[in-house]
Amino acid sequence: MGNFNEKLGINDLKAKNNLWKALLAEFIGTLLLNFFGCISCVVSTDVMIALTFGFVIFVTVQSLGHVSGAHLNPAVTAGMLATGNITIIKGILYIIVQCIGAIAGSAVVRALTQEIKESVGVTLVHGKLNEAQGFGIEYFLGFVLVLTVFGVCDVNKPEAKPAAALAIGVAVALGHLATVGLTGSSMNPARSFGAALINGDWTNQWVYWVGPIAGGISAALLYKHAFSAPSLGPVKIIERYTTVSADEKELKRLGGTKNEV
Image (cartoon, rainbow, N blue to C red):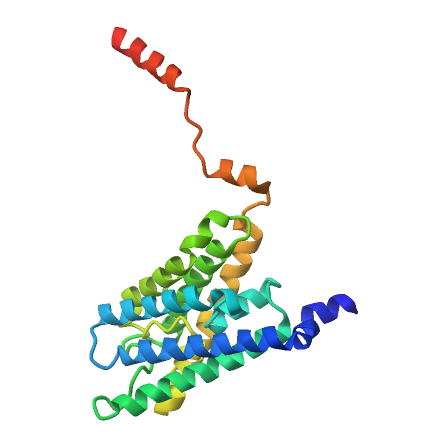
């Protein structure tokens, strides 16, 4: 029973201060994501949109990662749930506040820019693609994002931590640079949900939920069971990423032999 309560997240509810701080961080993070990301869609080019989304993720993860883990995305949270890295209750609450934050961010964008562009930040599948193709694109976007998150957050890869926020931001920018003209490069169900609700356009909405979440869960399970770094202790971790060179004298000796030949 105790193990079930632990997985469910009863203890998270008891630690109210920490939970509310984490939920507030997820709300603020997704609000900023949708505000800066969607407002870049008003007058920016595809490249500028991609960079904006990548930068805002980099900034928010760097700022809020220590509070909530800075998921900022139901696909990331779903991957964490599938691998047992977050409790069920906390995961559900994260997804709820992520959606609320995205709605708030999109609402502010709409209020500030509706005279310039009536519909802002809505993700749509390209007219020449069908929904199944859109799903496939969003699947791989969710996959690469969550694979990156798990790779840089692996507790047995401490050397990856300093660059974690940058790597995640680059993964988001990568997805947008490649596919923003095809599906809007959502990668994030909350981001698409917030824009759809505020703009009243639900076209292809299932694609932006099922695609990234399916890709995220696949990447999370694959990383956990195939790619996660083994726990070898601090010395072995250093050795794993260090190339052992031959003794300097040995190198000189070999060099001398080569010259003599």
